[in-house]
Length: 169
Figure 1 (cartoon, rainbow, N blue to C red):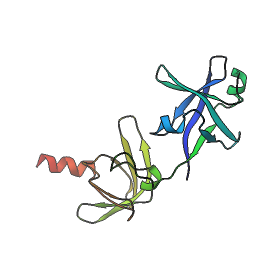
Figure 2: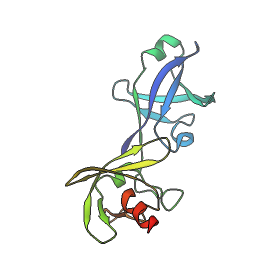
Figure 3: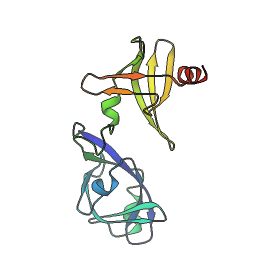
């Protein structure tokens, strides 16, 4: 499946490097030298150089050797072919597309709603669940999402307010 793994930012220096907004957990693999990244507007870009400078990923691309050429790529999204069914490093590693569409059930078995999005926030990922009463946000942590069954597109969730009231009693 074709997934967005990054976005090209501003040019860095005069030799054709660009800052990259990383949108993948596997940056070392997706942006390795020689990796081919698809774009919607500039064809396929091949990574010619990769380094981290002050915590920011810098990439150089084959055939792009000056600042002006890189500036033309600013805000271009980078895509990679990813097998979303490939097992992760850990048992509870999931791709966002595996979670979107899952039915979210409460511990008592009642349907809460369907996962419509996964928000990648700095502290943790948060599930956005569309319910009859509107959007419900649940941090994607084991204490609040104890069961995830990707094959059945089903999960068990404990909304934070319910979890907090149980902990007090």
